[in-house]
Amino acid sequence: MLGSDLLLKNIVLIQKIFKETKEFSEKENDLKIIINFLDKLPNRFQSIGYEAVAMVFALKDLEAGDELKFWSYYLEHYAYNHSVQVHIGLGWALAQKRQSPIKYLDNLDPMLRWRVVDGCGYYDGFFRRRKTLKGDFVLNFTGNELQAYTLGLGRSLWYITKGDVNSLTKIISTLPNIIHASLWIGIGIASTYTGGLGLKHFQALKITAGKYLLQLTLGGSLCIWSRVKAKTIKNTIETPFNLNQSNFEVYELLESKVPSNHDTLDEAFFVWLETIENELKKHIEIIDY
Image (tube, rainbow, N blue to C red):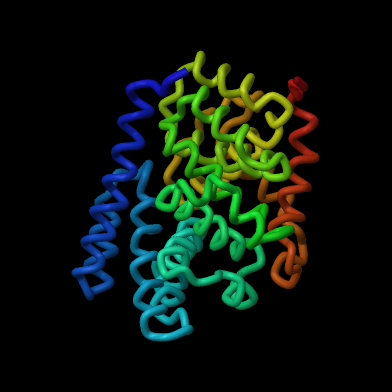
């Protein structure tokens, strides 16, 4: 099933916002002017602009050495509400430079550091599609690194296929089974973020996910959590992946599952995901094909 006109328009708009914001921030040195530019972006997709600026600042840092000086200052003083996208933007920069993200992770928030690897996966999936879809990355990443990387790859697949369920199925079938669950989390994040899916498209996506409906729902919930945090979403029901809860209710549910020791727990992000999955099992019926 092909994406709706609204979905396609949203994807075009998202890509336009990223490109124009990246180009603007590459030429502008005054951070306050850049933030003013971001403030004027469409609220729904404003975080994409923050992600683009994060990439630009991270590239400047990487060109100067190993310290993330500009990127860290931007995150701490101007972009904390968009921290998920800012970490993804760092991943874009590292992937463009073909640098491993691993050596940077220890100095980042355990709840957010893995979104850097997610950003690498998205970049490779979108811009190095042929090589990435051969599955070569499985040789480069293992465990948590592989799961985070394939979250981003799953997000990229949604944009590559423009939400075409048949194309998604075809591509996923060529990739190793070990990463299918995390791919579907990524697809859940991306499909919820772009929006624009009609009821029939939602139903087709849920059926296609099959036994990975739990992961699809988890991804949609993660997207809502980050958008409520960024204040770019209203308190409506955005994702009907069998979750009849408002956006703010989803946010509170996920917030309540954040590990109490998340500041010091290296695997806090993955512990959080597992806890959320266990909670979501109470709300959805898994389709097993």
